[in-house]
Length: 109
Image (cartoon, rainbow, N blue to C red; front, side):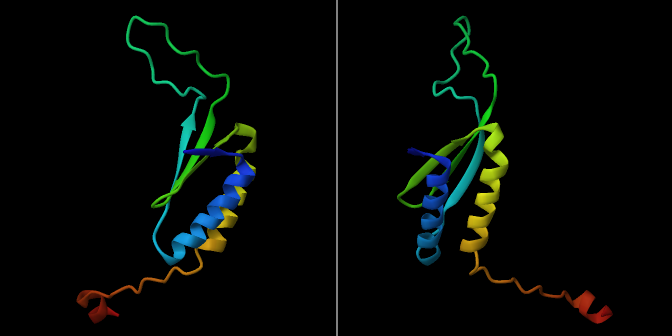
């Protein structure tokens, strides 16, 4: 998995979304990240230190490409604005689902 800077991640995410619009799908996940890359040790061993500040790790995955970035607490609002902007730009081809009325509602209305 490629760990990118926040700005580079957003630009790569936009490219990923545009490519997947034509061919396939992609997923984006958000997770709390404490900075430790190792699993928790077993009982009886010293525990990993608690972080001073938790961060957020954002991962994007398509069929054959994986991207990720780590966002600090102070940068979360700015990154979320950029994420929303990317999703609005790239998700323009979605179609509205037509609601089907049931027979009971159709008879009443």
